[in-house]
Image (cartoon, rainbow, N blue to C red; front, side, top):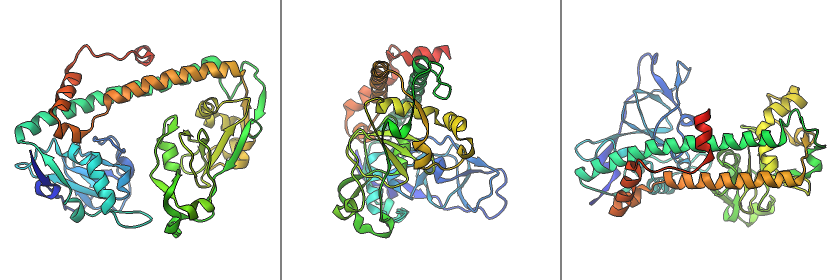
Length: 396
């Protein structure tokens, strides 16, 4: 095991397309999935100004807003955005199959964030990124690690299918217990959303991009992207307000349901802590007749509900008035609590699945036991997850 810099074992691949781009897959930052080492999305035959060429096996690193943790290996030749750094392994110094995992790990992203410059859209340059230091094992050990890590990535994707199936199972249970919210077949009482809880837009009288002094304090600041990226609960944040930032905003209590009204509209998640958020997010605090979890899953049918109740705005941005006037069916609280218990059990199953799929590369590089444990897990044919989602996947 020896300490090396990224620039000792890899180079920035600098190649541009001077001719026709016909037939080349096009990759932008939006095609890189946070914390995913494989590339699964791209465009073809789209109009663009990109000229940067990448080759199969190169690692595509999202250099803008590195805290989003975007880096993936290219499965083909193509053209990418200038906000992507193309990294190529030096084969006699590092196994190319291992390089994607060296880059897609917490240590490098933390380093990249620290070296990024720019307040609105911080970017990191290769000249800084190449100085990232890490422990690199022998080539034989690299081969072992790469084999195990790619096996684990395959296993992780299987777990992700289980997680998706678990989500579908919960949605199907919602329909089974309450009926379609757009049709209310059980004849539950109907109330306006604003009448079953407190509903207000977030507050941000000034934009942090225009006044950096608003940021950097102890008060969590949630943005639209963090609501969209969350599943049921928001459990982390990237930005904070200072005292000055808090003074021009509002602190929402833990348990608030956050609802996006711009970009990806009506995405919802529940705050796992007190936090502020801007006016692109609406906060909902339930009253006595509904629960946050029930309303969260009710919003899963939002597009259909909106088409039924307000078809003229179904394809546009929404606002507080539209949300306030939406009709919500209000089933008995006992039934809502029963649904909550089902969701909590599902959430435990998802957590167990995620624990099985998570792997810290730094531990694998530094701790032999971690490699052994990973090997046993990946190679075990007897490992099964007790989860009703598995049966759901088999039926569907």
